[in-house]
Length: 411
Ligand SMILES: Cc1cc2nc3c(=O)[nH]c(=O)nc-3n(C[C@H](O)[C@H](O)[C@H](O)COP(=O)(O)OP(=O)(O)OC[C@H]3O[C@@H](n4cnc5c(N)ncnc54)[C@H](O)[C@@H]3O)c2cc1C
Image (cartoon, rainbow, N blue to C red; front, top):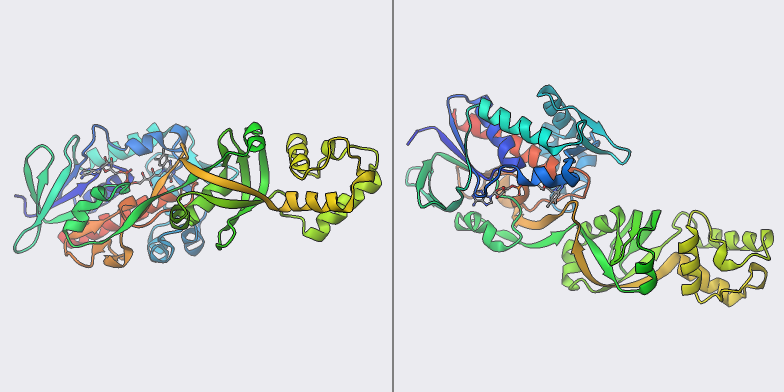
C-alpha cells in the first residue's frame, strides 16, 4: 500500500470538496474517492430543480449557523473558517459565477447544476484524485499501528492511512453502520423538510393559492414560524411549512405526523388592529357582502373560504354582521385550526435529521474524537439546515475543513 493514501467514501458534494481540497494542498498524497453508486454528484445534479442552490447569501458566521436546526453550535467555528462568502469566492475563482435570487438563494448564473458538476469533476481529475464508481465501502477494520483496511462492495480490499466518511444522510440507520462499527453513535434518522397533509376540503380546493406572510404554529409546542405559505391539493407547503418541519422534525415525528396546526393568515395585524380593520370595512362598505370583500392582502378566493369557514352566511352584508359573527371571523383569520394527518417529502429539497453525534467529532479538523485517522463531512453528520442552500453550505464547509486537515495530517 502507499504509505500516504487517503480514501474518501462518498462521491457527493462533501466528498468531492474534501478530496479536491486535500489533493490540491498535498499533491504527493494519493487521494482515492469511492462512490458506491453509478454516478458522481447525483444529488447536486437534481438539486434546486436541476439548478443547484449552491449556498445562501448570508455572510455572517453566527447568522448563517442559525439556519441549522441540528448543528447550529457546532457550525459556528467552522463557518469562521469557511462560510457562504468563501463558497462564492471558491467557485468564482474556478470559473463558476453565482447569482443571488430575491429570497437569498444562490445559483450558478447558468441556472444549471451541470456547471457545478463539471467544475468539481474537472478539479478532482486535475488534482489527481482517483475517482471510482460502483465501489462502496462495505466495512472497515482498524489496522494495528494505524490506518484502515476497507472491504469494498466488489469484494476487493483497500488499505489507507486516513479515511473520510462522506456517505450522505442515513435515511435508515444501516447507512451509518460503518461509523457505528468504528465506535460512533448515530442520532436516530428522521426526515426533515417536508410538507403537511391536510384533508380539509376547502384547503385542497384552493391549491395554488399562496399567502406572502402567514404564521403557523403547533399548539402545545414552541413551534412557530412566519413566511410564505402555499395551499396545495394535498394540504400546505411553502417555505414557512418547510421551516416548521425542519425545526420540529423530531417532535412532529413523535406525533406520528398527526397534530393540530394553527394558521394566522394576517399576522401583521394584532387582534385589535384586525377588529378595527373589520369595523372600518363596515363603515366604508356597509352594503358589500362580507364573503366578497377580503381584508388585504388575502386573495378573494381565500377570503371567501375563510368567511365561510367562520360560518358567515354568503348573503351577509358588512352592515349586518353580528358581534358573534365578527368574533368568529376574527378567530378564523387569526387562528384557523387545521388537522395535519401526514407528511410528504418536498420534491425540491429534503434532508435527514440525525446522523453521527456531533460531540464525537472535532469540528476544527472534522476528525473523529473516538477513532484517530477517521474523518467526517456532510449530511452523514447530525447536521441539517433549512431549505435555501444551507445544506450544501454545510457540505462545502465540513468537506473543506476535512480536506485541509487530512492534507496537513498526512503530509
Ligand atoms: C431532491 C433534493 C434536492 C436538494 N436540493 C438542494 C439544494 O438545492 N440546496 C441545498 O443546499 N441542498 C439541497 N439538497 C440537500 C443536499 O443535496 C444534501 O444535503 C447534500 O447533497 C449532502 O451532501 P453529502 O455529500 O453529504 O451527501 P450526498 O450528496 O448524499 O452524497 C453521498 C454519496 O455517498 C455515496 N455513498 C453512500 N454510502 C457509500 C459507501 N458506503 N461507500 C461509498 N459511497 C457511498 C452515495 O451514493 C452518495 O453519492 C437537496 C436534496 C435533495 C434530496
